[in-house]
Amino acid sequence: MKIVRPEKTILTDADGVLLDWNYAFALWMSERGFYETGPREVYDRHIAYEMAQPEMRKLIGHFNSSAAIGFLPPLRDAMYYVRKLAIEHGYVFRCITSLSKDKHAQQLRTKNLKMLFGKRTFEEFVYLDTGADKDEALAEYKDSGCFWLEDKLENARVGARAGLQSIVVAGDFNVTDEFPRFWKWKDIYNHIVNQNGEK
Figure (cartoon, one colour):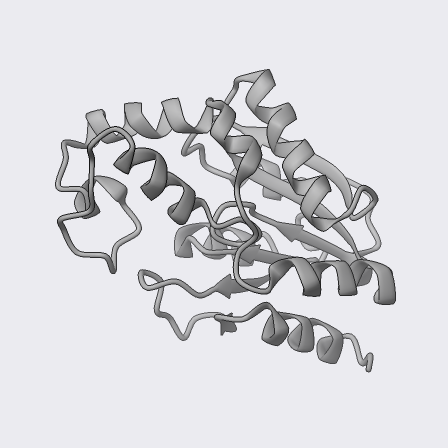
């Protein structure tokens, strides 16, 4: 198990949690003549684009390995409150993201996250392949009680089974009462500091 200060360590996904991947992907897709024509309240992009799953998987792989990945915007008010947690409260973030095995894409993501959220905010970056499960990565923190921020419900459940405090970052596709779920980072911030008895 990795050594952490669980009360001050926040494990976090990147896409849909820190970064607005859906916005950037939709823009990238539109430049290639693809538009969402299916239901929006779904996690799986092949449903939203009414496309065969293998074809969508290939497109997502191309996007996640492209230069575009280095320029994703922050999700909602994430930038302000992540920095606030790091600077004012001393939290450190460890990012666990299913991005790509491409080393250049990983470097671009690291640069993007540091530029938006601060050079010292992240203690570690763990890069998994596109769409990869996070069971093994989260098992490194088993029963640590760290906060775990995700937008994908199955990954939130994986974190809970590993003894983490899962928090779901709200999207149109992940309505749940299994875990604390927040749309704004302001509410995530308040939840974390309140759980730790801070002001």
